Image 1 (cartoon, rainbow, N blue to C red):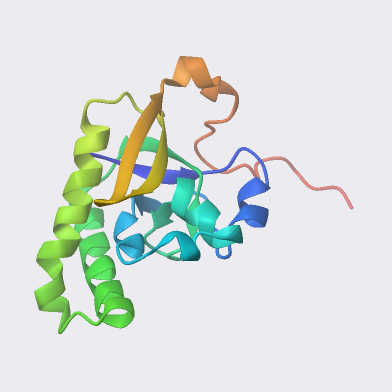
Image 2: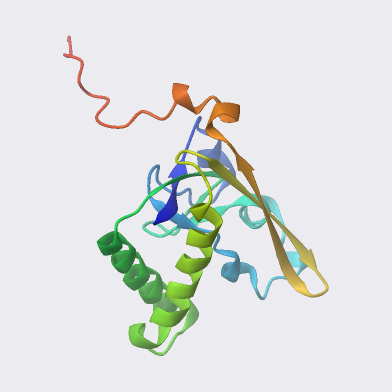
Length: 164
């Protein structure tokens, strides 16, 4: 199964979001956070999170870009639990057990966005507030178009000996 992880090419997310997601954390769209928002809520960094922020499931921070990658079943189960717990803590769900189906649906939706994409495909979300509520659209940037071979380094970066 495919899902998406937060990716940063520079430090811009650190400046544009109140709470930036951590590089490599699993992400979902997170549009549910904005379900009760109005135009008055769309100012400053909150507007940036609304307009194009993915939601990290570890920090619950936002990120502009995510990259498609393989996820293991055990990781998916842990993410479902974490997201369900977030629904209890932040949105008043009655229990983790009651929130699990909603969390699983959010993750299923994200997996559907990712399933037909090649590994390392970048995903961008765009949101707008309409009379019917929040409208999300998604754009895919294929790895060869993104020049991802320059950035998608897997493994430790700390292999070089240090000199002091």
